[in-house]
Amino acid sequence: MIKLIAFDMDYTLLRTNGELSKETEEVLRKAHEQGIYTVPVTGRCKRELEPFLPRLFAHYIVSVNGALVQDVFEDEILYHETANQELMLKMIKKGLDLGLYVEVYSGDAYTDPYCYEHMEELGMPPEQVPLFQATRIVVPDIVEVMEKKGDIDKLHMIFKSVTDKKNRQHVFLGHPEFSYTAAFINNLELCSNKVNKASGLVALAQHLGIDKDEVMAIGDGANDACMLRWAGLGVAVKNAVPEAKEAADRLTLSNDEDGVAAAIRQYALQ
Image (cartoon, rainbow, N blue to C red; front, side, top):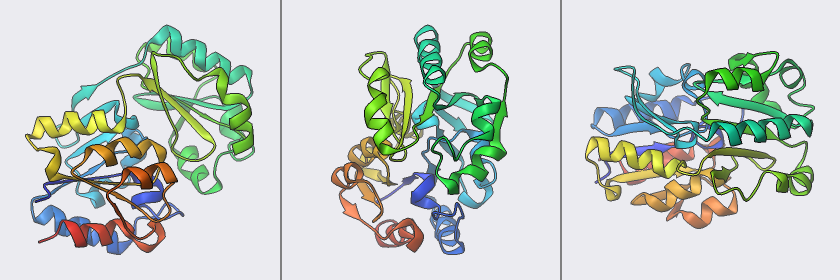
């Protein structure tokens, strides 16, 4: 019996245009009414999730790729894992020196004026630009701000193309202090080596006393693969990358065909 449904947001729950369909919202409501926890497990931070939270019926969120687990009703942090500040600052500087789109998550998401004003030119998927422009805090010097803040949850960088990523990502890879993942084909995300979507989901399941066999996870990206493998039932949407499909137990319709709603109806609703 499924007691918790964990779902990625972008290109999984949401349609490619960033909208939550009425069909998916209605299915989430039915799951909630049956006592099932509906939990976004996402690379987004809380600020990016807030417009959707009332329609997700989510009591809990797992955000920033698993670095943060929060009770949104009580405004309480249940789990938080940050990266090594000194090493992360070096990676931030490398990204800026290479002219990449760079942003840093520390509670909120921070970027600089150039990155903010040239998102699409720097490789941001066009459908993501409105969300990023609406939710980023723009600061003159990201390194200086992060030196003062201390806690760094995630470094997010975008390359201009897949080829650009293949040619230049090596300067960031291979450090044992970091976990590496990607939400789409030309980005790179660095968190603490203790962080991934599965680790955040495990922390929440333990808090709620829910066994992994009672969890269904749904995703599309490489950063979803670990939670699809961990959950008792892992489901990949049709538009998922090969890594996510290989990790999943089942395949559902695409995000633009309300694949999450179809999976919930098939595997979770009574």
